[in-house]
Image (cartoon, rainbow, N blue to C red; front, side, top):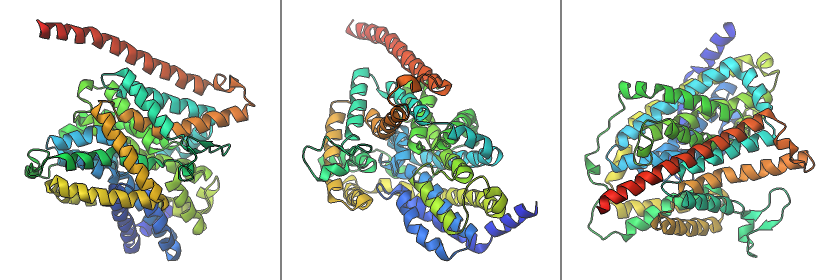
Length: 504
């Protein structure tokens, strides 16, 4: 008990609270600007922690991480451009809500469920860090491959009215992420002799192109003097979701928080996978699945709860095993080791005070994020009052800077433009873009884990059917595909009936 009180005292010092608040603010800014991810913010914040005490230093990094994860929803909802890959699923219903004049409700709901998901994952981490870490470390390449394949099966549920177009879009996403040097053998793939293409297409650059460039093209293609694209935007007021709305979806939030925590605890997965799985889960169990993609609040609640629950999940293998789940937690690991805190089985014996201080820092970070975003809603919605042409210019500049800053490569700016123009063409042909995103997000992990599993088994495919976990995920994938196929067959007769009535 004395250790807990000491940890609380260390986390509640003015220095620690200010450091966590600074991290949360910087993370929100970097997370909400496409291209300037919270990973970049963490890299910039790490040198600042050298001269700080352990708890404020780690609090600064955790605040940046949590703020960045939450901030990605701001541009996703307001502009339809995800600030982080984890917010890509939020675009699907968050931006249509903006089109219906519900931007502030979407923003308010996103931040509240984000905080709820993050605190839930923290509680799960505290009470089950050893158990969950043992389960997570049991996931080898074959198990992760099966998990990601299960995630890929959700493409069937995101295809819209045409399964064929959706599958083609998913394959396009997979193809884009194979460009460049092969990660295992170092063989050039789909580079067409270009030296620049050897570096491949960065995921965030591709996502900026998919979302931002079509927005810019549409804004500039409108006739001048048409005003705002979204009617009634200037009348938007800052409103928050009611307690009744949140309680109505309480079990959805709980399920998605569990999903996000579990996904986060598995190294090599992360927020994008969790958010898309949560979105698909919400759609399948919703009473109104036909409203998804048109501004359904459940389509905001599910991915935002899950991707923020990932933050607590990723700390489970990080603290108990010293295994970072993504680049962001790798920087947090560096911050821990700089201050002499070595994660592992002996962490709670040698540094119990610092660990409990980190727990309190996470809670304080979410309080800061909640305060900053609720305070900022009144400011965020004013973005929608800017004329579309001016907003498009600002977005273009920010996206170009963001794309360049990821790898300091001019090629990435060109790649963003080409992918964006192609996305605009696909949208005109009514090809859904969501399966492309899912293919890009899951493709590299799917390939690398499949090949790693084969290398471990000397090419024997038996590794994929001797593990019970793998078989369970394969069965779930077949179940999802089968249910979606049956749903599609049921829709066809209804469609033909409606066409017949219309013709009559």
